[in-house]
Image (cartoon, rainbow, N blue to C red; front, side, top):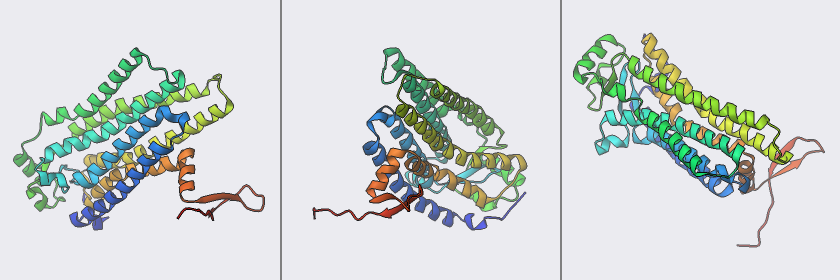
Length: 333
């Protein structure tokens, strides 16, 4: 099944320009987000500062990897494609770029799981870190990152012959332009797409189960009547809601491309514009996550408002808030 909708995104030139523009936005947004985390995290949340910074850094790397370093053009329903990014200028094989790309998304989800597990532990035990805890955390992180970095191995152990695979794919997918099969960077990962889909589903099932489990344990802990002040309880609940939004929003954004790829492979549906759009969405997930973080975490939001010299005032005695530029003056020149 062929489709020419979103045809304006099908061009490699337009696709490249959009990704280059996104890269500039990503660099500014992620740099600012890192600055806010480092300098504006309250002392009460010092225990999560490192975890949030690592989570932010991983999301930034994934964004830049897809929007600048590799810039993949995927030809779904053919599990093949070619890169347009700067890594090809350094001679890095397309197969290695694909491996790093699929692993990077799993590493990001693993980082979220590790962050949530640490948050659950801090809620229960505070800042206490025993030797056993350190070893457990090391083992927990090692196992999750090992899964994220090795799940495509079964597919790579049975890669199709590239020349024969090109002929088979070209004959079975008449919608795909024939000239792309002659691209020197062309790489065929899987003839049917079944192997890579099974590997992705298995690894995601484990990671998403772990994520759901950690969310559930954190929520249960917050429902307990611990001997802490109401203000501390309120801050913990606010942080949990903000953290949930920060984590869930990018995962939902990535879920759409994942669903689309599965749909395309199953129904043999080809739409190059939609293929490119899915990677544009993946490339901006970190930006959206950073913006969400800055908006929903109260200390960060207040810091930005102060930086922009905005004041909150009440109008006519009502609770409605109006934001206006303050008229602060300074004696320094």
